[in-house]
Length: 383
Image: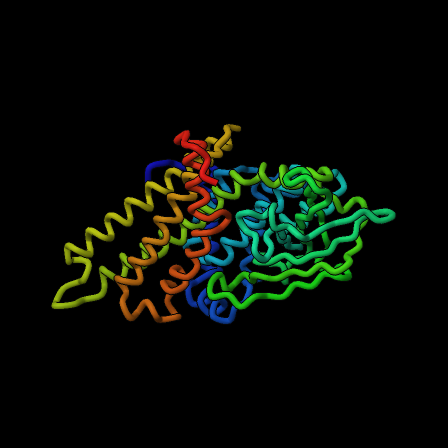
């Protein structure tokens, strides 16, 4: 509402909306979500549109474009197919890491296939007992052997691992807290790799896994980037990941708000639509304004990043704003629909469940607030 797309962005968004209306109708999305099944057909249709190649040079098999097109894509996916939107956050992080830090051989081998939907990647960093404070708890370790590395450890809460072809694994390679971590490209079917889906209550169309690595032998060229610099490489992607997470949260929230608004127009009580009652009108207005403000902040930050600006503060603000606005919109949606919100043929219960992911991912809202207190407000560090 408060920003405009350029001609190319508008054409792309129109095509994406058409694709989603045809390939991801609510009945199909709900059925797959109830069955905890990944939508392979939608994944490939999005690849054919060029969605998974955004941010990657066309010479490497990508679609070009940058942060703005990524957030526009993810917000629209958040409206329709929430689990696929979460997949998109991981996809863009994986392609960025390979594009930025991969060798020429690694980029030629992986990027085109990822962008074309022929393979999928997963990012393996968190471990049991260590999400936000990952460095202190990281026990997964890679040790040098003749001709390469041996990887051992367990990762937890890993998105998409059981349906991925390649895993980007963060492992300790020396004792320095932050400069002793390395990224590895690990084939998902390598001997010693086992991914087991966890039984989670949300993001049902995109699995969350425990991944075990038992004496996994890797060649020297499995290293992505520089040995012992993996954590610093991951830090370089955080602004983009926060913006992309913010876009999904905004999309889920706006989807919940739209459904609540449609229901308020149609549902009648005491001889009139419930949307005519002032108390409900005000709640819908305030929720809509909050969502528009958070979404506008997200797009604005993406445009700044596209210009090459440091958006560490802006991306953190956008993530915090959309997470809160999205959760409140979904809660209001449950209230507006009442008993109908429990109907699993409608997406409200899915919005309500799925938005919870962004209260703690990719970083908890409290940790984001800690960061902003220090970096934005100039207050003493709280952790």
